[in-house]
Length: 494
Image (cartoon, rainbow, N blue to C red; front, side, top):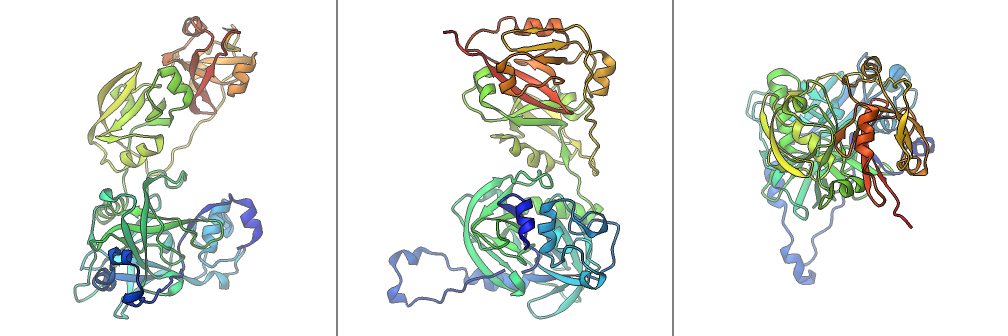
């Protein structure tokens, strides 16, 4: 990997595992020399013997001809759109500016058979835009595979091979029952070494990687050695059931460094069912923008802790809006699942079938309440976002203690900024250190003060008139089309 690429990316980068990895084989030690604790270690022999016939090596072949679709997350002309995409692209063995001859190549990954009639599960990035896909079985048969459907968001691909006899299959487990510390085992083709077996423990569950490409997946984190070529292979529990699909590693070198991530099998199988029936995946949507419960919010709302997802914006006409969810609400529980931080919510909503009615527990003005929300359907294509700024209007006023002045907005300006009629006041000037240090800027639009909507200078004055020393004022602020909370803690008197 070129040093320029490393310099242009963060120190630790999520890397795809497409191509192939290393495993270490430790010879059996003599029984008399083994420590007594070794007797409690699991024996994976039975799991391997039973499931190896259902694990396959996946070969994606590329003929070197450019296609209009995205291959390996590239931009036009074969160049990547971002540094991380370039790292992923290099894992497929492609140079910076490949010639047509160089573009013709084969990339390797793993997969596993989920039904006897020939359906195979693997990663989307293993087969994305391939001109031909073949799979190699343990009995050395080579079969052409059809890509039934893919989902880049979950990084799942469903393949189908034709065979005259029933194929061996894996058993599907329940990834939701996994707990940190449990033993797990991976099987795949790292660096082309097919049927390599590696083991470790679950390090964490429900891990959100903060990726814009995969905000709807809570990964299983393990310390199982995973390398290039393990992508798409199965992760087994001690009962020999598949609980995950090996997908990514976290690394600064491109090799395994002790942190690996797998897609929960319940997420993968949900995608499989939809790919079989309609060829694409539909996800649920609430129509809210959420943020973390900050220390300032905890103080202002007098919360026991910072758990939950704070509603920073509600899409007009969306599911949450119809259910009465408001800016400033804190979502504590979704359909029986506790929400500890904002990253917990998107995967749960995405897995919900559109049209399903679910209970949502929220905290509003210090009181808990449960509302019923009918989950909507997420658009298959990303909607464009209008980030137009609001123009200032005359009629300044403000709060000297907070260190800002605010101005009225007319409905035309509100509409341009994506606001509703009577919503928000404009920050005209930042006059004090308190507001400046908190990050407020001229041109910001204040939507709420301590959970009270403000739509006029008079409303802002009323909401801030009782501000005292040592108090925390929580503002919901809109900037460049995005909402967020800013807390101002007023210094105490001398």
